[in-house]
Image (cartoon, rainbow, N blue to C red; front, side, top):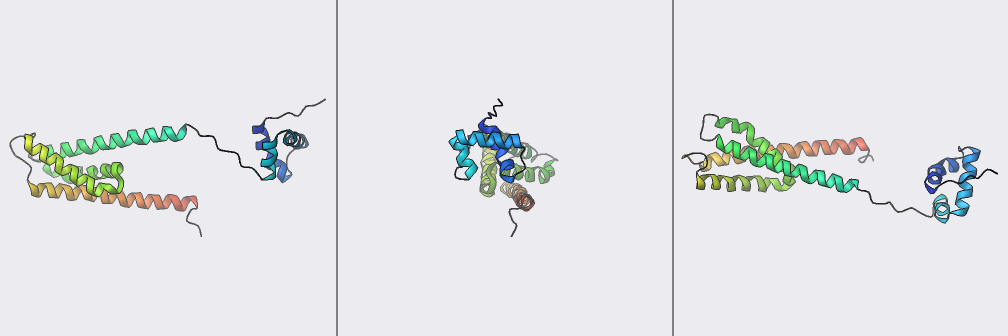
Length: 180
């Protein structure tokens, strides 16, 4: 006597083949015997039941990675601000034309659209701290130089926003979400 006992998982994997009529006779018999004994699989086979999706650990892991990356981006943004402001008193101050857009880009990765306000506020706060404690020598950072740094950082934010929009739109088009 040949017992065709299968698990619910195997039955659910074979159901589409049985419904389409392409399953082997043995698979067809096994599925039909299983759905006579299992009410959940029978309702699923008839289309009256949708099984609950069991929560997995992967969304939590992805969330942890995103938080960790946000911390790394924030640290890189603050390090860029500190490094850029330290160059202000020297001959390398024009390197800030390259550094501050990256500060804005990292700010966008941390704050998204709020970075238009957050990055300039952080720059002003750090500039006040640097001037108050004289961290980079006797020469303080003047207001006009700070405005230029803010503008360069905002250019980095805007470029990051545009790239995010462009690549986000391309992903949607590639996945077929924008089809008519």
